[in-house]
Image: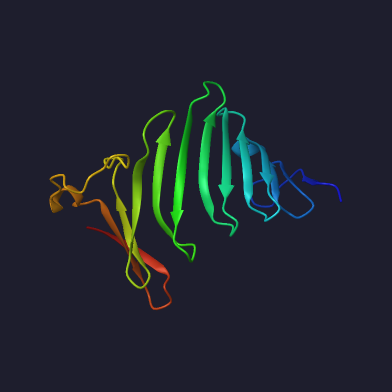
Length: 162
């Protein structure tokens, strides 16, 4: 089967193209020139022409995203986001790294019997050589916790900052 090109999208009236499986291949209104998919129907690469940006995704054998790399094609600057999962596939932590910078924790998910929220570290925690013996007070974390409010169906209905 050949890729299908639709000159007018129903929702936005713009030019999009799709592959034979119905996956979006390009969306020129968003300056997305190419979207490559892997065999598990997960995005492998996205190229944005106007921004000069290439985004690469990597997955573990279970289909969980383990990294996202942003490459500025004009300057070769890169930043990489790493995702750490538990045995069931829940994201436990997110780490960021830019070019040759050290690895820094960006988010730490807060769990009880299910996900309760997120602790945003604002890249203050250096994961290489980090020690818990440093003088960390509870005031350092005020306003950085984001608790998710859910209903009985576990649908998110709001957020509370702590």
